[in-house]
Length: 139
Image 1 (cartoon, helix red, strand yellow):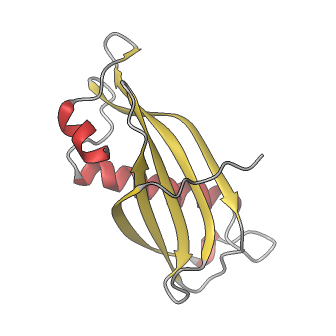
Image 2 (cartoon, rainbow, N blue to C red; image 1 turned 60 degrees about the horizontal axis):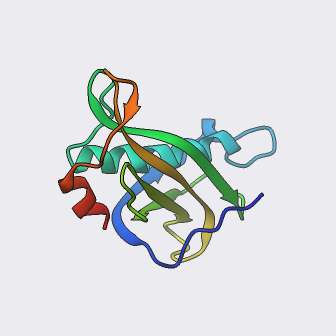
């Protein structure tokens, strides 16, 4: 199943990630689990940059689904540029999208993925309305 990244989205953050020799698997390319880690790094670093890191005991973002479409094999050495986008704010959630490309091949997408980010209250164990300041950032 392939999820499509929408054309209408807002660029919010970019992160450079150094690929490491130990990230490769027996096939000689970056292991598929690391693609998800790279997506997570971009999402979590963006959340921290806006003052909304994960908050296990309070209110904040949680991920309710995640996906990755693999298009090309990433291979060491090199750096990945993760571009983070947002779209579709709802009452309690918004969508995040991330593209992965090599720094030495600008615009060539190696993978893209995303996640639905839900605003959550850990004390009540329930979704809550997006704070106005978050809604403004993701709109």
